[in-house]
Length: 324
Image 1 (cartoon, helix red, strand yellow):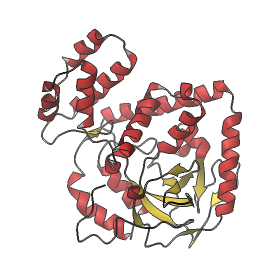
Image 2 (cartoon, one colour):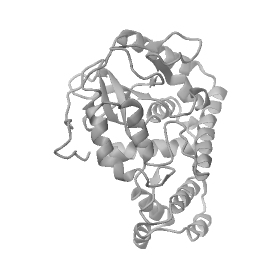
Image 3 (tube, helix red, strand yellow):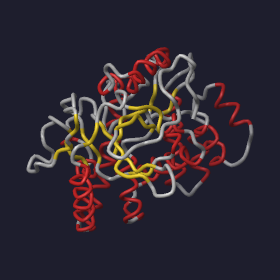
Image 4 (cartoon, helix red, strand yellow):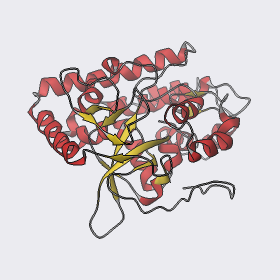
C-alpha cells in the first residue's frame, strides 16, 4: 500500500480493536462474492467470477488502492495470534435504494443507527456510541478477513464504538443459516440479479449518468462522494480529498481508468474483450474483436509484447486500475 505524505494526519500502521470503526481499503462487493464462492462456486456467474478474481489478485499483490475505495468498517474479531482483523464493511450505496440492489446484497445488509430498518420487517439495527450520525448507512453482515495494510486510519479519531456486538454476531449466524436454507433456484435467481444490477450500471454509465449500483460509480469522483457521505469532519477524509482532488474529472468506465487525453471508450471495449475471452473458446472470434479496439499508447505498448490474445488482453487490463 502506498504511504501518505508527511502532511497526512494518520498512520498507515494501526493496531485494531474489536468493536471499533476504521477506514479500510475494501470492496462492498467482497462480502457477497465471498459468501457465494465459499458456498457453491457453480453459482458464480462470469460477472461475479471476474469481480472475485480481481479482488483476489489485488489482495495477493497488495494492490489495495486499486481493489476498492476506502470505506468505514467495524472490527468484529481479531484472529488469535495475529493482528488480522475480521471486519464488517459499511456502505451507503449512493442514491440507489437498497431495494433495487441485487438480492445477495439485500440479504446481507442491515441498517446502522437511524437508517430505516432493513429488511423492513426486522428490528435488527447496528447501534453505536455516540449515535451514528448518518441516516443512510448499511452494514454488510458477512464479515471478511482483512490484512494489516488494508487498515489505513481511525474513523473519526476512534469516535464510534459498536454497542451491540454480541447481537451482531448472532445476526451473522442467523443470516448464514438463512443463506444456507435457500433453494438452489433461489440462489440462481440471486446470482442473476447480480448480473442484472451490473448490466444496468454499465448501461447508465454509457448514457453518461453519474449513478451508483452495488457501491460502484462511473468516475473517480465516486471515491470522493463516498468520503463526503461518511467522512464529514474526519481527518483522513480531508487528507484524501486533497490527495485525490485532481482525479475528480477523470473518466472511469467499468472501473477502468482511461489515460488522460485519450478516448475513455477504449476501456469499455477492453472489458468486452475480457468477457469474450471468458465465454468464447475460439481465439479467432476474440482476435476479430481485438482488431476493432481503439487503444491508448500504454495499451498498445502492452500488446507489442506479443503472446496469445488472452495473455495480451490480460496484460492490458493489469495496467488499468480498477475502482470498486
